[in-house]
Structures are given as structure tokens and as C-alpha cells.
Amino acid sequence: MLDANHGPNAFSIWMAGGGVKGGVAYGNTDDIGHKAPKNRVSVHDFHATLLQLLGMNYRDPVYHRHGFNERLTDQFPARVVSEILV
Image 1 (cartoon, helix red, strand yellow):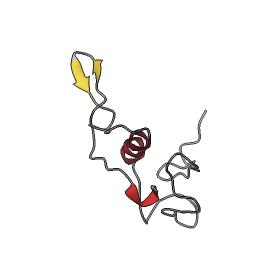
Image 2 (cartoon, rainbow, N blue to C red):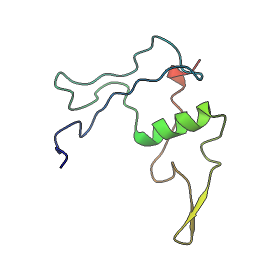
Image 3 (cartoon, rainbow, N blue to C red):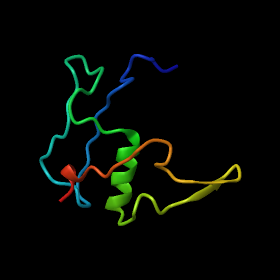
Image 4 (cartoon, one colour):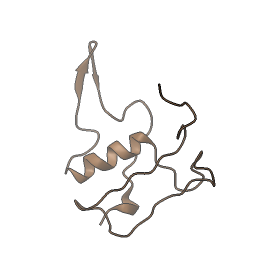
């Protein structure tokens, strides 16, 4: 069973190569790693950025689900985190 208090609002990820700037730390968390007060990146922003790194416009990929055409980043606003890209 997962602990509901383990990183509920903040997490870290390490990225290298493929168009990501080297030696960049983007954003931070509070002292106990519970929240991200600066340069927050949502999961949708992360997906949009990954699709950009793969050479795709994040608005283009569409999949058919339950009779609807849906996009990976449609539920909430998304942006490409260009500050971490070369």
C-alpha cells in the first residue's frame, strides 16, 4: 500500500540528453519535500515538454476513448517548459 504522504504535491525527476539543458535545476521544494513553491511544473506540462522533445506538437496526438477524441494534455492547461530545453 502506498503512503499518501509520500510526495503528494511535489516530486523530482532527472533528465539528460535529447535536447535538455545540462546542469540545470529547475524549481524546488519546501524543506520537507511536501510542496513545490517555485517554478512548479504540472504533469501536463511535463507531458507537453516530453512530446516537444520527441519532435511533436503536444496538441497533435489524439486518441479515441469512450466515443471522444482526447489529447494527453487537454484536461488542464499545459505548456512546454522551454527553460529546460537547449
